[in-house]
Amino acid sequence: MNTPLIEKTCGVADSRAVAAKLAALSHPARIEILRHLSASRSCCCREVVDHLDLAQSTVSQHLKILVDAGLVRYEPDRQRSRYQVDGDALADVSASLAALVNSCCSGR
Image (tube, rainbow, N blue to C red; front, side, top):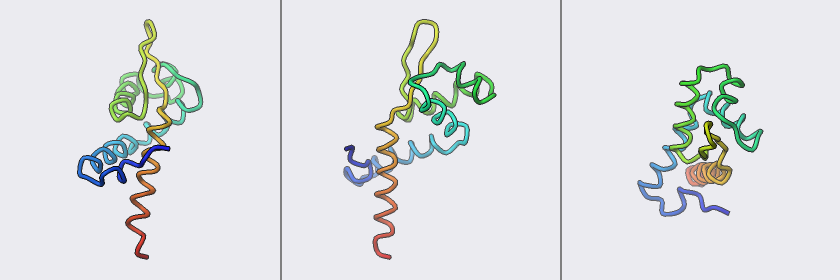
């Protein structure tokens, strides 16, 4: 199992890494993109656009943010790019957030 980012060294860099991933998750459209991607093995941008009824440029920007945060993997596939959720990265964010909540609430 992955060691949560916050527990690795509890340093500023780790806090920034967690914050960057949480920031990528902070938009409702990106949450919906992750839900859509997780329902299939991989999708191209057009499939996400059709599902969310957002402009292609908007979906592309959201996908870029998710890829840059390491939550979604990108693979070029001929003329279309394929995207898929990085389940391990999402599990790591979940564990990091749980560790943060536990450490902040341990004195209660």
